[in-house]
Length: 213
Image (tube, rainbow, N blue to C red; front, side):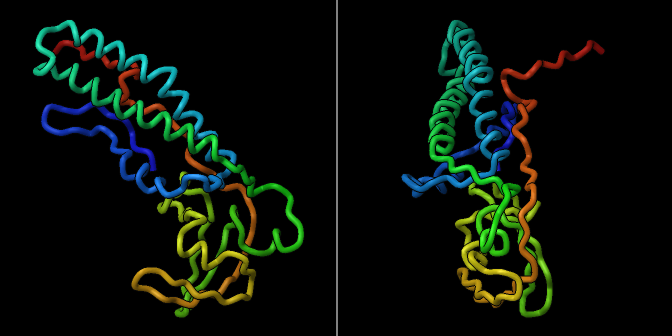
């Protein structure tokens, strides 16, 4: 999931690291980016924020800091340059994901197998061999949220569930795990994806003035 952009403190950096996320997508060139409407909107909102607000704000800080003496020892300048590099890597990444988007609305009317079996956008209730039931929603890789039990359509679990319907048994094969699952219910409903929100630590965020004490 995307992390908030926060400016580094004196002792540590809270700057986001999207490298792992982007690396995980590196093998998806040419693969359609199946995504829900709200998931696509979140990507667009983040890109718009970076292009329209954050990058200009950081550029302004870098320009100001560049005129303040030795750049090698200028913390504002060094931070700004790092932040610009991160932004300039993130924007093309988001653009590629948006351009590759294949929007699938879980709430769209469905007929036949598409309404009763597991495909992208399904919310699935299943039971393991011990009878323990779980519910997951199959979403795009840009929408994975394990706290909400949203799993990527490319994950081992989603692949095991695909094309199955209530009453079917499937076998989940994952590294170090083989498990038989029983499909209990398949439904298609709204999957709420957290919208993008401008992080409070962003350079473009309103600065809080400290009152004198």
